[in-house]
Image 1 (tube, protein in one colour):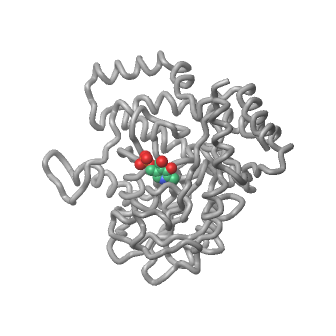
Image 2 (cartoon, rainbow, N blue to C red):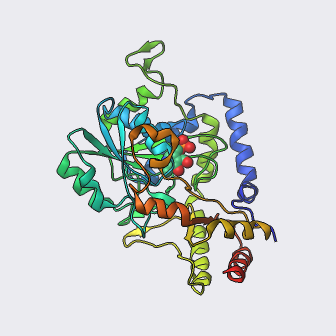
Image 3 (spheres, rainbow, N blue to C red):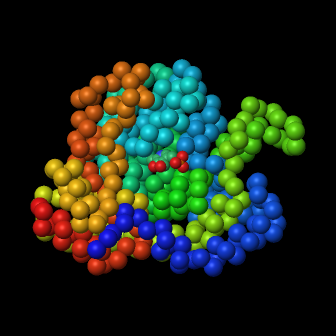
Length: 366
Ligand SMILES: Cc1ncc(COP(=O)(O)O)c(C=O)c1O
């Protein structure tokens, strides 16, 4: 049997007709830049997240970067970032001129270890970026408490967690901003790049409207040095179609995760994902931990099963961050995770017999 890591074809087939209709509508209107669907999608996504405002941008990276810029963060400042995440979380900080300061992650949830944040705070620290890794919320109560005490901004990286909840509230609605990516493989993915910032802060919202559109107040009147970071109308139209299915797809992801858990329980050499109290995990990734990971990847591959590793190198050991002066041994949990984690196929259209087959192959080897 062949099991792809993700199957976007099945998703496309489910709603092909709706896609064709909305794309035709945009082509008829030709409002390609900041058109009707962008405005409607922003409204609908803000409502979905339970916040007042949403601003469509060209990527999740820019959502983080422009959030930092709109909060006035730049050269000479420090921003706390988990060391175990996709590099864009830290790049967004670096591109403002500020310095990312890494903090290790929790061994159970893989999210930032809230007990290690305060030690990393200095006079220069201006913000914390918790990442809701793999689709599970970081410990927001603890993070908000530290931020309040130390007068820091919280910018949520919710790139992997559309629809995830913490204490029955959607992620993205806790910090000054919440940042989403619509990279095609995300729980809510476009047919190209896209991103969104959500916020309840009117000032930040107004700043972001300027920053994403060349600092433009009105046609050819530019009041700040902005950027070109707009969400395309075509992408917004596609995302509106998909947003209607997001909750259903997240429920299917959870169902698949529980089925994996039940079957994998019988193999003691595999650690299955931990669901923290108060969290609704949306399983952007279904990540297990095991020894001899690279050998297992080979065996699965030989049996037609695609897997992936998010992430094999923690940020402090990336060549791009050599200049920060960290070394091997500085973040023990992240280093251990990077050697043991393995993402198994996960998407809403994954079938029961595919999961059974994956687990059977794992069982035979382990
Ligand atoms: C945790 C995290 N942050 C940020 C990003 C950046 O998003 P984008 O690829 O849309 O720029 C991603 C995307 O992969 C991500 O997973």
